[in-house]
Length: 334
Ligand code: AHG
Ligand code: MN
Ligand code: MN
Image (cartoon, rainbow, N blue to C red; front, side, top):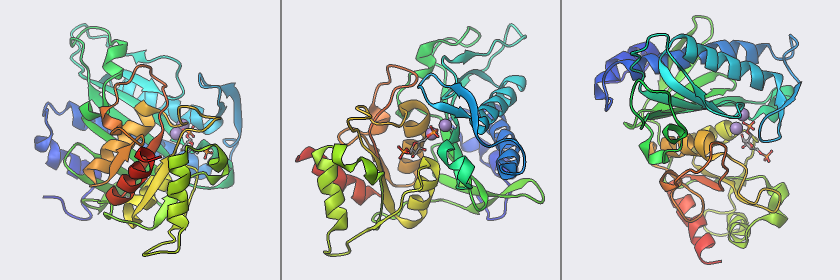
């Protein structure tokens, strides 16, 4: 029975028995993520004070400039998960290939792989706007005790065991699901503990916020263009209001609380969309569905898509159920 003000540590232990697999390994994994997120939070809060903002001078495999905080957050999450020897593999937005973790113990029994976007919304770092971290957890499909393979990572979103995000906003929150609803915890920075502040989070079935980078409008598919015009029509409860932070975690978080839809469609510049299926869309889709919302590429449920590559991109429409269904209707009919 979850209680407000319960700490995240207490909550994880108390709910351990309701996990599908109850070896305690997943609890230890979530605890590691909680710890790494605290360290990254500390650094994010110092941005501007120390030499941590700006470009790290390198690009990732996707040709994007890496910010110093991208690199810092990536290192912290990988270090925490590797040193504590809890997972058998990690894939990250900032790593070309997946990392296989070979435990010194030859009989290592680690079952889980983690996929992360260590720092989401990195274009917002330099301007003091919310950023986040996204994570997704699967059970490996190859035999325990052997090195992980690519197929351990290329699983459909529907096979996720847990997923979550951290939003480094006006306060820092960790929101996650293990397939039994969504709970949000707020960090008390004075004490360094997360407390259950948002039990059983749910998207309102309808909403009045639409979030999309309208600068790309002229390149959008006709169905999305028409849906945006629908959002802007003065009719019934419309026009909706437009809100776009440019960091998926923060836009999603607001929409889940207030009711809304987030869209990153394909365009000429991004013919497959921009967001990455494995460590951005799938975890957010899992959280959305667990919170009674929906996530789709316009036609297909995100979590039903069979991934074929670690860094593949997909168009993403996610949010309040009725809004996503309406956008899908426009996609189907245009
Ligand atoms: P990342 O910082 O991890 O590369 O992700 C950025 C993503 C996502 O957070 C955000 O919603 C989107 O890119 C914003 O893209 P635009 O600037 O093209 O709108
Ligand atoms: Mn991202
Ligand atoms: Mn990122």
